[in-house]
Image (cartoon, rainbow over all chains, first blue to last red; front, top):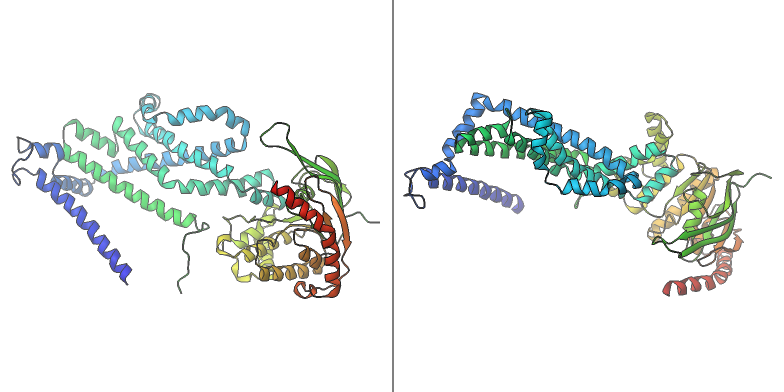
Length: 272
Length: 268
């Protein structure tokens, strides 16, 4: 029972820490509570760091008034599309290059070069090619997701146990069946292992893309607020994005648990 | 005269060093091994003598540098379709549970799923794992995984069974159990078996014939012994019979020199 008591205490401390941060933020920024410590003008702190109560009221209005859903939806669609397209491309090209040593040798330096390039700078090109709508954000997200998945799949195919492979061949698997029943499952285990990373980067691609130029999405809300020095809305946007990212991560964790049942975990005793 | 189930004729296997250059390693030289239908042949030899190489050639997983493989009289091209292979190390697909591992071969052949599952369930029962179909390989013990492998191979009813030290990683009790189970399964429909092992006792206890390979490199068969022990056998009990001890002494005398040679080479 000690253990569960500890976890409750732990949770309590975590909540207290969060509350302390917000209280500290409130006390430091709202004009008139503390004498101005650093800034000459008492309104200066609020201007630079926002005020938590106003931030929360902004979030409340967004969700209550229903303005935010359209933007959240756009960001979600961009994230999912970037993730799906990047993953499919990564799997296809990863398997192809892993099984074709000559092609892999030819492409190797270019893949390294593109991977080393800071891909966010591609955003202006994507805006020119795909416009300011969803497509350019998806393209940016794809360039981020693709490499994570690609390298994992490549590794996954290369590391298939030769014995498992020989066994499948002896059991009568054709080259095509080897791909489907051996290479692909092995590669998928590596893809799932990098799921947190790739979903996270798809999200980054979507938000950064929106922030650099868009007409919709949570990144656009932040961009707009920044333009009029509405720091409270900027913070509200950041908090909403954080919550959104946490929700995505939680879904990924659930998916992972379902998909990776075959992998050994450190302790696995059945409860009677 | 009927054709041999498996005939390896004057097989030579030379490997070039992976680092390139002219370094070469000849694992087998002029090795001939003929297995009759229904015959259980054990191949023993010191470690590193090319036993596994020989089996890979028989399986069609490795092309010999010279020589020919015939399966029921037909020259072998590609993977040996008549053979099942039991590997020394883990060969199960870790992402499939025991049942799906056993059905794999049938799936590759396009057998309908229901049919495959029914047969696989039958085979799991036959190897004593009736209730373990939904377990993944990592949830099974080493002996259980070997049983799944056995079911996975035997479900396809191969005419030739190639076994590469399949029980070497098991503890001695499990191993004797598995050996007895193997003999029982084998006695039901008498496949041709090539059983590779470094353990002479295991070889004698199981086989109709024991072939001794010389120490590598350039290994070749240096002796053949017919094992005239009565069947059915119990591998634990048969070791105590006078005839077993006599055979063991005889073969061991012939082998000893090669084992020491192999050992000396490895220490260099």
